[in-house]
Image (cartoon, rainbow, N blue to C red):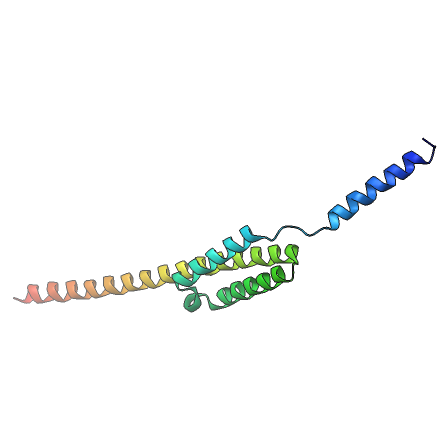
Length: 128
């Protein structure tokens, strides 16, 4: 070998690694699947009504992720799908919070009604 041969071999190895890194990555089907399932769970929980902004953001991010995947921009698709999954989880959490607040308000109202009934019955029973 000539003295330049090791340099050429190193250059070829570096170029080969560089070209391999530029190749297409795999479609992020697992991340898209998680985002789709999270969005479906948020939808079935009622997030469209209770957390419409977060739910809409999740839908938009998932739509953008699918578009990015279709144009083979897999890194962008994975990022957008991850954002959609998080948005869906937030929408579902806010939905659970809103429903819990509604249930607490209903229980407070029922409690107040029972207290009024009890007061009425104790007043009525004392006068007899």
